[in-house]
Image 1 (cartoon, rainbow, N blue to C red):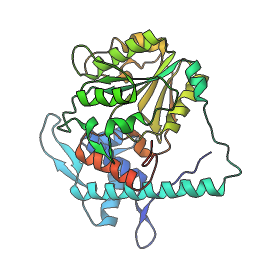
Image 2 (cartoon, rainbow, N blue to C red):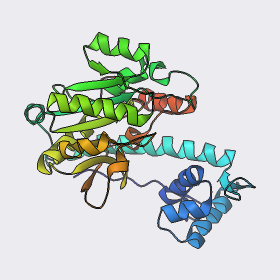
Image 3 (cartoon, rainbow, N blue to C red):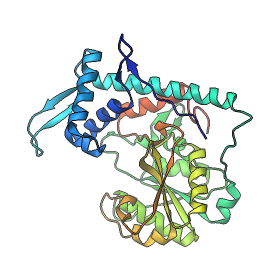
Image 4 (cartoon, rainbow, N blue to C red):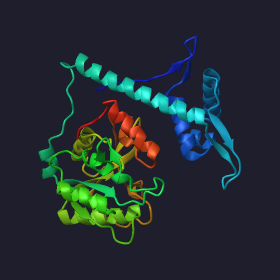
Length: 325
């Protein structure tokens, strides 16, 4: 059992004008390039999505989308600068509300809540390891983002802090900086053959997991520094009860990374090519279970300096894993 918080902006009459639905629409418009595609991805009628956006624009007295003309898709839409600013403010406010609600919930229900825990010794006995992908190009960032400072530590060091004590770990390294970080922590590294595509790292990590005799492996992107140890523990616990299933961390039902794969899928993972990841091996014959994250930012990755700034804001607010590993 855990608290659930929904935040809304309302007008003078108390009618909702912006909340989780419009916020997710804006995110997906940015991702998919049009309101129609965003609505389809959410299983929502286009007319309803358009009505949500128009209602929010009227209540906020600001345009939230703008047309994009031309291109291979024939045009589409994108969030306006006002929408980007609104969404950033809304996410900060929502995160603060969720953090406060979590603390108040823990205090109010201290005697009545039984937390789900996982014994790290059991995970070690089942030979489950954690593999961190840290060999990407970082083309969008323009520099080695994993070595960028985040509250006094490199991004990769922050990410490594999500691994529960006692779990074996290996890192696919693509830079001298990443190798030095791992050497300092006594962490095994592998160097992908052929290049720095995601599939190159996946093959190298799977080969390591097979040599180590792991029964399952949790794959963690190196640029997700806010993943909680508790979330990894929960994934391990769910995997122990469902040893043949793929376990994926999600937020409000939308699965992403980290992902846990059983050894029965290692051979498939080793055959992935190009920039494809583990999702490429999921099919009708694979069972996938989503584990809900404690916080939305656990699923954030860092592709741009602005993304890094968002992560820093979360830590500065003392939310989530915050300032300690």
